[in-house]
Length: 251
Image (cartoon, rainbow, N blue to C red; front, side, top):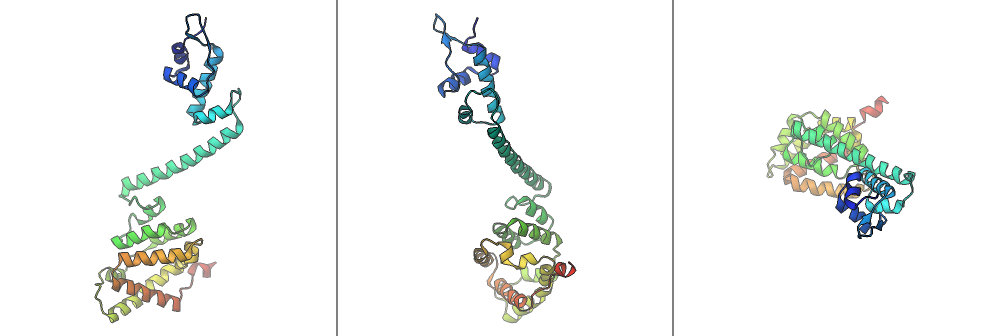
């Protein structure tokens, strides 16, 4: 006694369409036919369909299963390769879950990487500052990203920042100069604790020039001319009198 296509599908826990598709793509050998013309399947066919079904459930494509042939044992190399792919997928999904948790819990911005979103979730930042952080995350290598996250967590809003945010584009030169000088102290302290942030060669070691050009473009797009001028003046002050790394001194 042999099985029909429907009976084979039922025994294997799959569908008629699946069995027919296995025939079409060459995964399942065509069985002999009965005198009435109906297909006649045996135990070997059932085992083959169960194997195809199991490999598919593990994540192999039908093309990959076809390359494996009909050997009874699972190929170690293919299994290891699939395991590595699944590990990468799990890591990606874990990162997605982390970001979703941040968004749900703290309304963290979805355009930021999870680590950076967590760092900025409770920080009082202007829209321009937050947008600039987004741009910087597209330039940083992982080490710089971690340092940037720590700096944001340590960040304390000072009076000078409020003055900078409120600076009108027609502010006179004296106002801009004085504000740059007042900002130098807090920024110097931040860079002393997080020296990576003051060095584009460490922020974006592969493309420091591109990082510099991109950050300048972002600054001009996000801030008014007076604010950009203050930042340029601030940069010159810090270059003339660079901050000492308190962490390096304590090492």
